[in-house]
Length: 284
Image 1 (cartoon, helix red, strand yellow):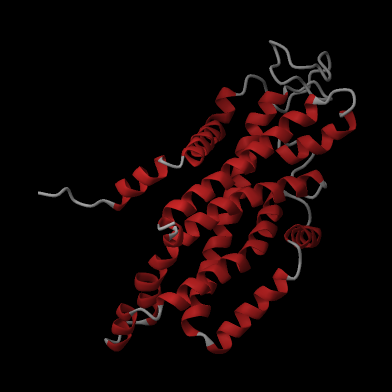
Image 2: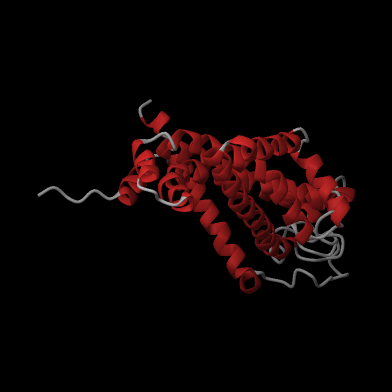
């Protein structure tokens, strides 16, 4: 008797073969664990200044050194992991939900609705992502909540176009035509028969988009449009530490490395998932 086929086991078997992506996923899981446990594992209070330890280099007592107010950089980095991941995850998943709905409607119904959604997306695509985010935050005002809104907005058209393309292809399948002929409601057809065909593409794109969201949120905070200056957020840490780059470079290098490694890890995971889930690459 042959063992029952399990798509989850098959995915896990293929994903483990992607060594780089697997290592990157372990790194991301550790980051998520650090974000969850941040208040409990931070060795010092990330907000409390210590004027007796200003700009100290890395040492046994402060493994990543201290900043211009004597605050422990490692503690601020750990707390910043929670903030940066929360902002990026929230903005990407909100953009995914709204973009998926719009993409499904655009591809399934077509006509004037498709033209309105796609032309609106083209307008948003005409602006660079960061420039559009800056414009939105400038209108709404600085703050992490407004950063989430800004990053969500510039992510919607990308998700909408991705899902629309998958929907146009999926709605030509025989089982979709059969469901229509049997009088199934449009909502049931879209979410039961067409949406599952877009899931693999969405998973890949979401993973890569999280890295983009981290960069965008950090950039906005670096420009003074995101988190407040006392907040232990990676972009803020870069911004406040740039004045000391010549005298205490660790203040900038540590959060810079954190941003670089995190964005790289998500992109590597996305590449690995594409090799596993994209049917066009499975046969290569």
